[in-house]
Length: 334
Image (tube, rainbow, N blue to C red; front, side, top):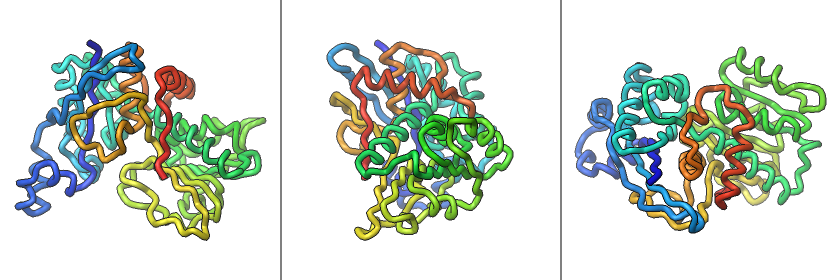
């Protein structure tokens, strides 16, 4: 039976103490020390999945006991070794593909080193996430009456794997794209790649607030562990799709603003699944990165897929067609 494994991690200490209740008795610093030395483990076994009555697969959620702040502050080698150790666990569970979720997909070289140390395939889910963002944005624009040919798109975190894919995929749709990220050299390369005749004009803006305030459509896809934008700072009637974990956008939308806020990267499954653990999402809704591992398993595409920074846009189209084949659809949570 085809099997996938997907790596998850706690977003904050509340998630840790919710899973390991006895840890509530200890101070935060001791819990963080415990996480540093705790090995990866099996969180749950995902029971047999029937896909449209045609194919079946099994899966596992594996846990990496590190917080986002630890993954960006601890020595890179230490974090990588822990992720690879989780991959070895996936191999023992006979998984055909190992999906990297959350911050595990962005640390170091985004799965490349991990893949070199495993006998099974690795993916980060970036292609599926980018596809879901583009689908959600296009749907929201259609409902809101926004014409992208007369609008500006701002991509916060544009040089990351997902942000770059979204920028390249939407370059022929919008009149203007504003890109922002921390590294100017990467921004310049991205601008050169997507600013061609017949495509959008591209502007580099390193001030996140200025970039967001000047756009009608905003996509946030950073690995920054803190909020960057208050939704009520945005233009009235604008659309913002936030695929960052933790979220980059905060605040409740005021009725007078009419801002459409999309929690991006969510996929509605066409069948019932028992994940064996509370995912914090609605029934049969999963993150796009998890969906990518599932879809590749259904198609028996046991090869490295979304890894590294320079993922081909063709992979967004490929995984999107597979999603449609099996009835996976975008579930933008507002």
